[in-house]
Image (cartoon, rainbow, N blue to C red):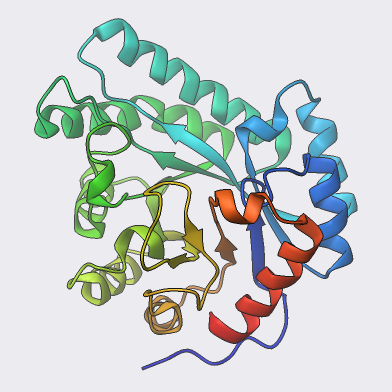
Length: 277
């Protein structure tokens, strides 16, 4: 099963981190000029800016604000660090409200000084602690499972099954999951777990890019769709079969592409989106 070819940009969202050399103002103008309809904002793009005014700027360019990245990083062996993480997530919720973002993506974190099981318990406790704040603000939370190579410090949630289990256990309409093909394409249970997302009505976000072969950097060498090993089109078909009709979010960390002319890179993103997503 494969998805139909994308012929327009009505569901294309690009993360600000994807075109990192551009400030958010420049990204907004250029995305809009090329017909992109959605933007996901990374918190670093908001530093030293009036967040509410930035939200107005994005919407004035015809961009829908899809989500804010990122919250999370709950686990720590020290209680003070865990409390600081919860405070920072509450701040992220406030920023999402100011920006007008309906969703925060959670990169859940891990502490290599303790067992993964402890980190997972602390992730659940951390999300439980902020659910009331998020619900009161009308902001949803998406648990994003990360590739196992990041289990030491970036996330103890490494499969979609783990993310689904946690979302079900938390039992809140505020909490769901984000599916990122870069982190999950290898999982033999991926189709089954995406279907489970649909059954529980908690698939909140879908991120796309590609896995370069060979990979030269495990963080900063993501590829454009069609560059590498990920069957993006097949996974998109599984996502669409759940009834998901949200944005397809291009999230690429790439030392290679960040060195390029970003206007030319944006054209490549759009071409790859239409032809290989």
